[in-house]
Each structure stands twice: as structure tokens, then as C-alpha cells.
Length: 115
Length: 114
Image 1 (cartoon, rainbow over the protein chains, first blue to last red):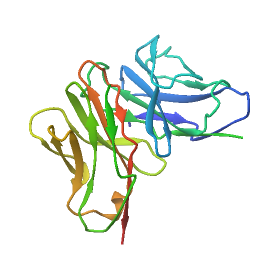
Image 2: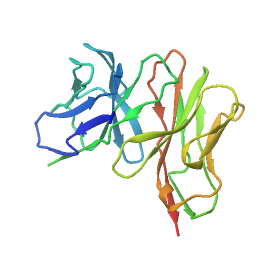
Image 3: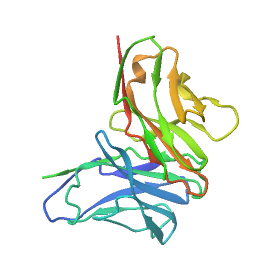
Image 4: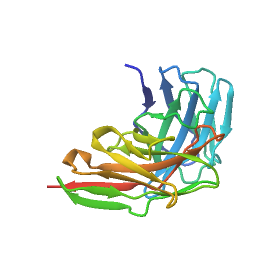
């Protein structure tokens, strides 16, 4: 079945540690996105990528980094500079960026917590 | 800049009763409007979207929404809810030329009780 796979489902980070969240899609979508979800705040865009080897900052990119070396993969690294990383992280994809009417397909999320 | 307001953070309702989840938006340009649903510990899935044309949009699971340009609203309705509709619902907006970067509301938790 086609879809978006996020792993791990739960992740714990120690102080000063960088952690990487995985996102893989087999939908052959061009665009991929990372959102952060906090209770009562909805979803906020961290980074997005329209094409391989290119990505742009979203609204809350500080303390995060991404790469897009392959079309199907868009990993997110939460660095030690992110002082409040505890949140639910959602990866999404869409067929072609620039199409504002295109729907997003979401993964099932990763819950990151600080030890 | 675009913004989305969901005034109700929680909406309790009895099974088989009707429900309306409110969404208002603000934008200086034409927008596309979406409703997504999130079941516990899962990602979001699209319920319905308004792009153009008829202002009444029908989606999955018996939901519908009406676009009201004068009131800048896109309220979600269902005439008779089921216990399985318990979930969080997000209204979102995108705009022409802005790519597919959605601006989400803060969500409304719908709790259906027996």
C-alpha cells in the first residue's frame, strides 16, 4: 500500500542530544513537509521541500534541520538548540508543490519527549 | 497573511445529534479551505475541501461544510453524529501562489457521547 511511514512512533531525547525523525513516502510525491503539533496550538510548519536537494524554512525552523537527498525521504533532525522539543511531529507530502488546491497526505506521527 | 480561527476547543455532543464545528478565516486574497480530521495518535486525513464553485461542499463520513465569503466562514456540519466521529478536527487555509503550505486552526475536539 502506498503511504507515508514515520519512525519511530515514540522517541526520547536527553539534554544536549540531537535526534533524527524518519519520514519515508512511496507515493512518488514531489513535495514533503514537517509539522509540529502542540496541544491547543494546531499544526505549525517547520520545513518543507519541493524537490530533491532543496528545502525551505517554515514558520518555526529554529532548532531544526532537514535534508532531501532522495525523493522518498525527508528526515528531520531536532538539534540541541531546540529548547522545547516535546511535541507530536507530523510528516506530510503532496503531489506537486505550487498547487494550493492539492491535499496533504500525512504520516501517523512521532511523539518526541525530553528525558 | 492568512489566519484561521476555530473558536471552540471542545464540542461535546450526544450520539445521533447534529453538530456544527465553527471556522473563520482571514485573508486579503482568495483562499482554498480544508477540513482535516485526526483520530487519536494518528496523522490527519482530509475530510473535504472548498476550491471554487458551489459553496456547499460534501465530504467523507457524512460531513459537509458551507463556504460563506461575506462572513469569512467555513463551518463543518453533520446532521447525525456517531461515536466513531470522536476525533480532533482542523480547519486549514491555503492561497493561490502560496504553494501548498497550509495554515491550520488550533483544532476542535469533538466528543460524541452515548
